[in-house]
Image 1: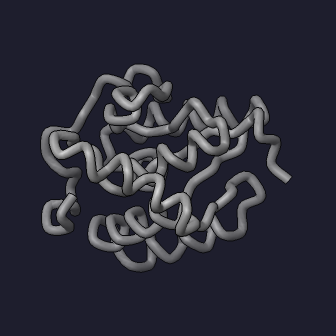
Image 2 (image 1 turned 90 degrees about the horizontal axis):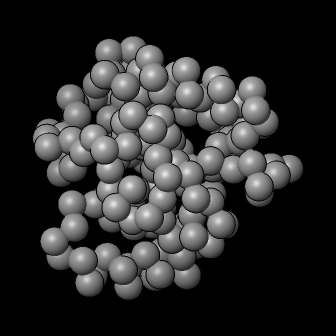
Image 3 (image 1 turned 45 degrees about the horizontal axis):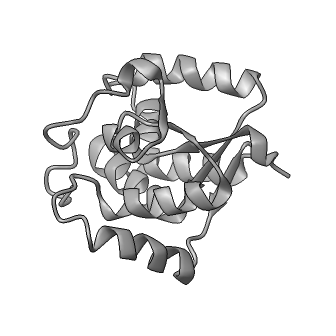
Length: 159
């Protein structure tokens, strides 16, 4: 069982930075991840986030890499994959529908609803929308970086 006080949410960009050596945030995110795991933290993510990660990995570095990643996450005792409930999705939708100017994805809104419900304040991500939503972002030096254009492999995915 994962200790709720030692949970860090890991977003799509966090997973991609860990899995893709060509990602600009790979080195810093990998170092931060090692530190967090050594300190006894565990990751929380959602099926929505994993959907994004599988898709981007498939197009960025190949289907086999996406499958290896999925198998690794599913087998890990250090990752809790939460299946988003209809109630949680409804909560996210209520925020999403009233934020027409936000650059955040719908998946981000779902992630924030999950984080609030679990009391998670910290995310491993390079998405500055998490900071704008009131969460702490690790690695800290990535917290003010917001991608002006989609990461490689995402251009045709509506990101």
